[in-house]
Amino acid sequence: MMDKFQQYIFRDETLALFVTFVSSGKTKSNVSFENDEATLEQDLNYHLDDYSIAIRHSSVERAESFKDGKWSSFEKDATLTIRVPVSFNNGPTKIRLIFVNNIADPYEFSLNYVYSDKLKFDAIEMETNRKNDIAKVAMRVTSGDSLINVSFQPFDNTYSSAIVELYRGGLGSTSLMGRFSVPQGPLFCAIKDLAYGRYHVKLFQYRKDKSVLFESDYAEIDLNAPGDRRGIGPRW
Image (tube, rainbow, N blue to C red; front, side):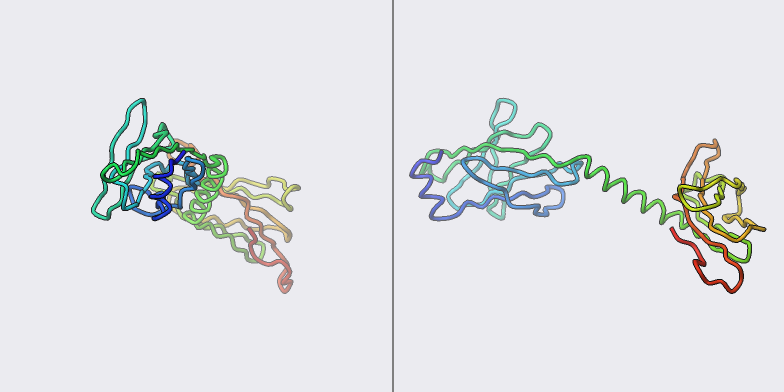
């Protein structure tokens, strides 16, 4: 707890505490400070761990952090800011502020780490990666009279061949009608002589060892009689 001299120092000039990323210098957020405890919230991207607490106050000469049973000292930089490295993986548990000319006893406060929701970030990252994968393949499903064309781009340079699966009916009531091989070279598949109705298409890309390189979502498309404009074209 602050003594009266420390209280006077920080009443005269507010102690500035905020978090930055060491690699970019970007400020993340202000530190929540209450009852001699600084609370740091982990970034949603829990893989990032190059944090520092930036401390600014004209009466603070240096700061010390306590980790693994010992204190480490940190001085002001050219911007008159003290930067104390912190980590959500075995970071310091306490920080001590040393005042200029010992005008007051050192002030010590604890660090409270609030961890982010890893499952939430993993789900966001998975969805983002999936969208990027789909965009990379640029799968396009178009229709003609009794005809479905499927074109695409290789997922990467390990691509060797592909298979297009054709299903009849809406999702939940689909039945596999056929699997159409796309040999190395062409990047499209034309499926002919189809009856009018609703279909779903799925694309699989393979490496030379026959392992799956990419699997698409279902692409829905309607084949209608000439002049019938209802539902023409792909939906996915």
